[in-house]
Amino acid sequence: MKMIVNEQLPGVEECEGSLKNVLDALYVINGKWKLAVILCLVQSSKRFNEIQHEVTGISSKVLAKELKDLELNDFITRKVYPTTPVSIFYEATEYSGTLKSVIAELSAWGEQHREKVKQSMRKQS
Picture 1 (cartoon, rainbow, N blue to C red):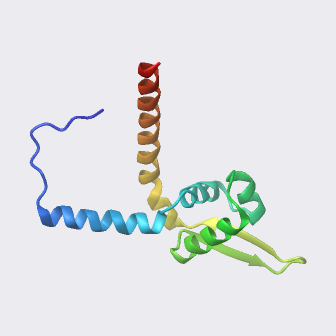
Picture 2 (tube, rainbow, N blue to C red):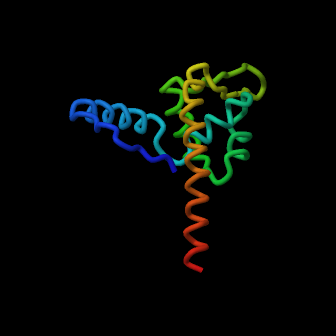
């Protein structure tokens, strides 16, 4: 784990600004499913049932809500094709690519945390 030594702590204004930014970001990508849905759609556009199959464990109701939220925040688009029956596809927007470094950092931290928990469990055994 990276240790920070002899670095000056940020001031109150900087902390408040940083906290506000983090809270704004978490408000948009909050919950268990949003990043998973975005990752699913970054690979290729998909229909509702394809997303539900790929994002294991998400209910139809929750997926419908998450897709609406993601569309509202410009992370995905919903495309309706006038076929019989109507075809609806969801795809990631360019804006969803701005989350690439966030997702990479979360992935690295998650791997590091998983290893820490495993080591902790080994010590207890």
